[in-house]
Image (tube, rainbow, N blue to C red; front, side):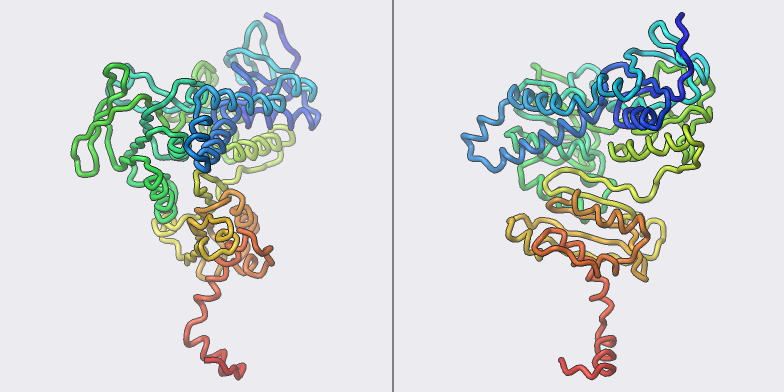
Length: 471
């Protein structure tokens, strides 16, 4: 067996976290080897962010066309071909050639640890001072009677299929389920969405998710929430599903295709992790806030270990790993100010404390809202559905912000910065926002704190002190 020279860093996994770690380490002067079993780019490029957001864009275009033009666009082969074209445009950014030019050695294959300093792959024994596990996740498939004998799709396969969907049944009411439900509905597919949760996007406050929920209903999507699936089976190549609803009544659905969108599970099999003493609980690698495993020279980052399975969080965690592994800088991963967005129409974006979490944990707070239908730019764009909501302390310190509405993913960034800097709502209220833009909603929702403090007693006092003449 060949022996490779000692590396400063060996990165296992070529998704967002792994690529960021490898490129960053090489740029900083480290000797780096990157190991990937399939293709560089990971879930985000091939089965996550890029194809899903491309599909969302196509679906939005389709919803604005007449029936004839929409029918021409809604061709499965054309859609798949377009998704592949977009992926090919972005692919060079994640290509082996690019990373080799950066000084990263790239090896493809499946390997395993021999010791905490040695990794075997192909005919090589890789030795390194530090390792980074960034192997990502795979779709979690729930235990449902009959599912093992029923063909189904996941986010890893749905974007590659060229079969026409007549009736797509989706199990799961999280971001993936909601985004794909709306997209395929706008592309002319009958959609039925089932979930055991009582409302869509169960991690969000219900007043925000209710806006999206009603929008999906208005677009003809059948929602079966608070439901329990009993069994799944096929009859004449059709997917049949039996489930009980909230009233414990048994119902049946029959569709052409089935999509499982019930979350993710870590990719840790075949790496020989337990043999080298890595602490694992319930299939989850245990890491500290510096992202060190129980073997201090082995780090783990990205979707593999993060409760926040977002590309931007994977990149953040990769940066934390580099500071710790290369420079012994006690950097810690961010756990509080983590923004996210579900890219439905309307979008739903959040950062920080939710109102539900504040109530559940007994935190004293105030909440303020402002609707898009009172924002002039939303009115001119004929896109007024939704509102912004902020959560703050009784003294006005920002604790969380949530937006459901047009461009929510863009608008939330101002609140992300304010929350990270520990600012009060007054900082946003006193900042000039361009008119007419949607960003006006950020200032207007911050204004609500000041307006609610102007009680009749306060107004009388101000009039008396400053000799004001108004009513």
